[in-house]
Length: 343
Image (cartoon, rainbow, N blue to C red; front, side, top):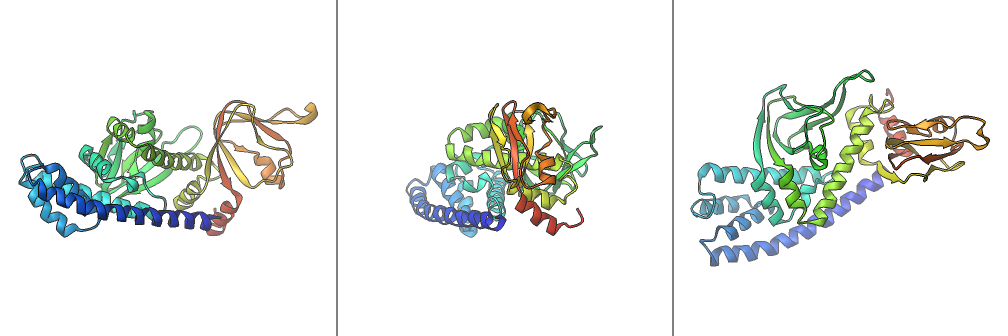
């Protein structure tokens, strides 16, 4: 199952990249002509340079950056031109890296949108062991790592010790979930090594996403994956797994919503997945009232006893409120167990 889904993503990515490349080639010719016909208009030249970077025509892009430097309507300063060049190169590297597994929403940016993102980025630096943000901070920005590495850590509490949720390095995006939901940070993020980052403010990203429905969908899909990763890392059944194993589970699980009163698990149906409740509440329905119903709360495994004792659910399990839960295929967990037998 895992291999099949991974292959599907790979094929889809190849088709998208081929289509994007064909479009870029046509745009390159058009904007090259516009830049030549209107040599004093920096807008056409800037877009042309953008396209050259995305086609990996770095040498030609460098030459045209020199022209852009000379335009009063352009950036105009040597250090600003170099900064723009560096940002384009970084975003290109980010696209290549993230496309290999599960493409970042940045991979699908068209030329105009990419230009909008680049021009809104603000640089930040961190020394080793400095906090980028802490649990409870308001999520006002997301960050793209340019250099260095970060550790995403859930602080210790009376219920559990500190949990490393993720390690982040060059090309990774951090902080997008709380930023997009305009919510508080749910983890500490600390510089493992000195870091250089690009910050994108919430209001700037929202204004960009509002102009692209497809972009908004892609960004939401990325948020859902990060959301699953957080809850999987918190659960005692998975928290001791190696980070790469938890990430693999998150990438190949599914976030599902059910309405209040809906049957989540039907009596005598096959158990094909582990269902981790992350919001709302549910309970078992026992016929005849011989046993009290079992309450299921966020963080609990739905039907955990049934899963351990048999291949079918022993009773119906119904959502008492609207609920969200993560479906983790048993086949995937068996593969993880084979890879990590000691856990």
